[in-house]
Image 1 (cartoon, rainbow, N blue to C red):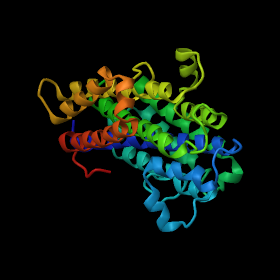
Image 2 (image 1 turned 30 degrees about the horizontal axis):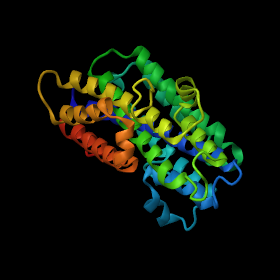
Image 3 (image 1 turned 135 degrees about the vertical axis):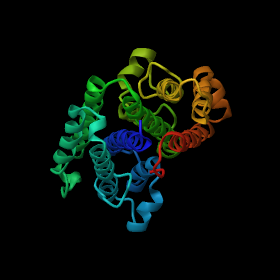
Length: 315
């Protein structure tokens, strides 16, 4: 298929996933704000949301303090922030409109309706009009997009690029969320296993729809190393790094065919680390170091996919 078409489909899917991920971050941060003593200050609570999205510098250019209302507006509705939910959904709709003929009519109508319905939230103060309901709406529409595309699109290259964009973006977000939890959310004065720590880890699990999965697998108190294992190495957890790369390596095999490519090599290298890795070794060498290396390698893979298959500048 034309690389220009593949580019639009790939970034359409990444944008939808990015909007959902941002909604999950806002939702979990808001829930933590309801827990007494979850953070010593408002800044200590909302700064991690900016760290996860990598937008601290951009935020500081326009705002002086890390206030809840400002951070929520910046991450949800700021049209000048390319990572905001507004920008992500607008990008998804623009990319979809450019390649309407490459997807089913149901998929296009779903994305177009999503953008039109999103207009009801523009101009609202989400801190007063229901942030939780807004986040639930974004997540539900993202789920609907994936369901419609999965249920109606032919299993050809177009479908593969949609799926590829989804899992590259999802892996990046899961790694960032877990990394920030270890370094910014954990209170220095709170012992691991304490009440606040329990609620924080519960919130992190809920942010990736993994709370019930954790209870089913471990049937025990929530502890950091098991949360990390679930979100990094468990291949049966849909939003884990391992599960994402199970999909990514398969998709790149189908797109590349018998010919070798740097994208296949990079994806295979990352997949092997997740498939054969042990949590004890990861913790011994440093979870932060592992996740930082993963994020960098995942970004390199995204750039290589862009160079190999797509023709537009990296978004």
